[in-house]
Length: 378
Ligand SMILES: *Cc1c(COP(=O)(O)O)cnc(C)c1O
Image (cartoon, rainbow, N blue to C red; front, side):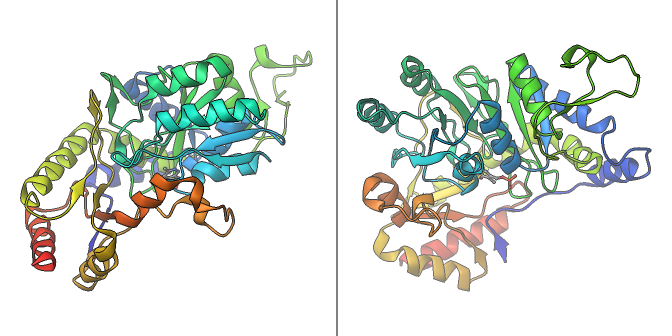
């Protein structure tokens, strides 16, 4: 089976993990902060906090921005459920902004219209969570401009987009957002097995994030609420969680990070090759907006909805592990909302299939995927 995505673990990665296993610290040692600094440098941001998943990171991001019962959070329906669940964990209501069918990203036009409408009914969101679908940044400048008059805070779900750039700045530089979240799940750009992180340039927000993901405990004198001089003193200031990443995970992630730029460029080359090889077939590739470096986490194609299921089955029967990213979140029984509110997401969902795309995909494997596509359409 050629999967839609898979990790690539090198001998150097294995050595890095083994070295950590033999060290004094499996948790709360020096490697997590080292990985945090390396990500901060890579995405050109001030503060990074590692977590045990992007799901935890999104949860903490919402809490740190004060999301709670009675609040509303809006995200994209064309995402993994975690982009919406994070608001539910905080007791908030979730709603979805329709997408642009050419990119799969949140539509700025729809966002603007929905904000104008909800301002009248007094149902504005506290936070919006744009998702960088398949690795292409949303139009963050436009989104920030639309949100600014309402004082809405922004969390970028960049789980797909580590190594990408928007208008010349790395995704994660938080130029147009409060917090950016990345995932290090094995199918994503680099992996720490499970893992994720939060990135911000706002120091008080960073302190709040670090409290929330570590039981609400601080050991920093300058942050203490009460006066204490005992050398063992630490203080729990709020009800937080244990969302910490282990040293073993960080050792893997840090080692993987050295490959990121190379892998982004391999993924871009593979997409170019796919586009050239399928130019005569009735399939459409996602469009890129101006001034984007796409990390290409996914190779999403659009086909006629009438043949999508047959093509999907044909590829699966021939050992190609295609997927559909994603079932719109509002369609999940837990959310169970009326799909009629999001016509673009519905139309997009009927057409999409994700083809295999990962740095270790060989030319031969790619050629056999293309051959199957040709065979199917003949
Ligand atoms: C993978 C993913 C997540 C969740 O990441 P985990 O690290 O598995 O928790 C959240 N949002 C999006 C868009 C994702 O693709």
